[in-house]
Amino acid sequence: MTLLPDYSVLDLFGCKTLICHGDTLCTDDRAYQRFRKIVHRKRLQKLFLMLPLKWRTRLATKIRRVSKMEKQVKPADIMDVNAAFTARQVRAFGAERLIHGHTHREHIHHENGFTRIVLGDWHNDYASILRVDGDGAVFVPLEKY
Image (cartoon, rainbow, N blue to C red):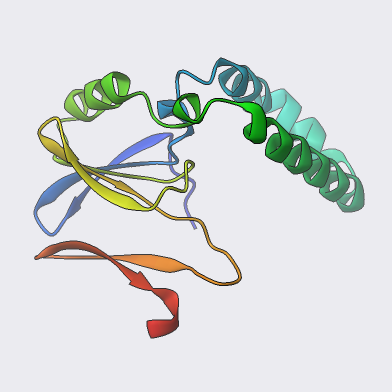
């Protein structure tokens, strides 16, 4: 397994495709961007990994719980990608297509001269995978595999 950088460009069936987690594209959510800056510090990550697994699991559970509560009061638009910043990133990497997650709003957008594909969330009642081939990209419900 290879840990990829925040942004990676792949050639998928002749289409230059930028892939990323998606959180860096949500620039309007300033509180999240501050949190991200902190948790991506290498020293903090090393210290965190030194904690017993039980403590790390509890801490992660608490952070997810707080995040879920915060999402309920944040305006929906700041929790989505910033369209202008996203378009600049796609152009900077010379990509024709962007695939990202983080917002979990499964959809294929055609905008600003490129295709933006948002991966969905996985729930007990629904999950999908993205199938990419020479004809394009399509979401396939997981139960079909």
